[in-house]
Image (cartoon, rainbow, N blue to C red; front, side, top):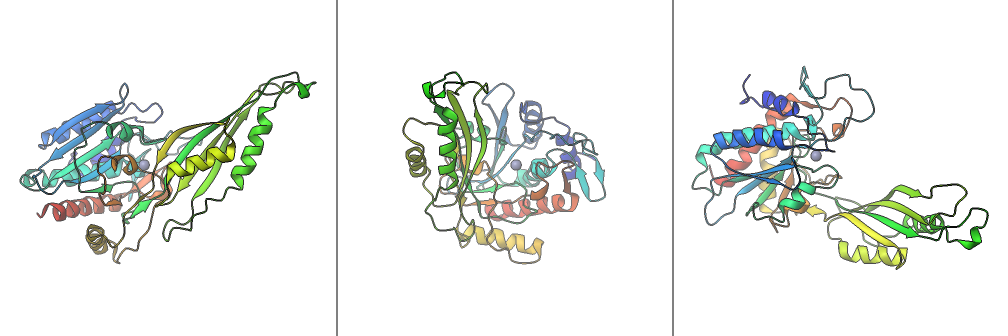
Length: 374
Ligand SMILES: [Zn+2]
């Protein structure tokens, strides 16, 4: 099988070890970029750090209507502590399944995007065209897209398809996230004389209790539901017989469409007290497009033909690069639509369905044709 077959291409992408951390996406990115160049795409590379390579590739393009963006990431999460029964990096196949780390999340989608783009590459000149944004470092903070959004490479896009795993069901949005460390300071003292110190763990514990009781004060979103908060880490102290002078908690907030992150940060700072240091390391708005949007309706109609029923508005719980890319593609409608199985993302013995992957090539191709009037 050649790399013009989507399963073969998926397998070849799975063989690149792009486990993040550390990432090392460069070889995989160069492999993809070389193919796109051969197919007539204009390819730009961007590295935000050594070997952390993202690609922006375009074909076609007219002055008036901007191109359709298809996007996905090539980094994958670590294998985890459970032993795999399949080789995570060889693209083993068994019946309808292609196994491997990143098969569902989301190298199969990358392969499908590439082959859909290839099939139209020589016909998009003089049409709005396509822009493919293949990112590094999506897992754990969307750093690749965050850096891309600061460059001029993204150009314009009029709508965006994010190939994260949805079993080819078109999702019209996903929650946002605000992740931060809250640092608490105290004064150290001998454990036998705690009255001489200030216990930072007590401060942190009181703060955690307040966070647990925090009321976002927003009505549930009709599709996304309620915002959530999770305190995921709690660190402090280094000896039982000392009063700890530092403590830190890690907090993960998932927001819904319409919430103002700046206002939320101000409220959280007030709740935790002025001297608590809030160190925000990820801040991405929720992504939402009204299901009635004209383009979303066209996407639904195309998917209906493959899914057998008209899609209903749904949203993903996970985050995607769209939050960052929308900084450049402001106002573009977004659909999350990919062949991977969402419940298999990040799992031991991750796999994707051959049938779904083949179906997604056709869906992506139809979306491009529809956008470009082919
Ligand atoms: Zn993903």
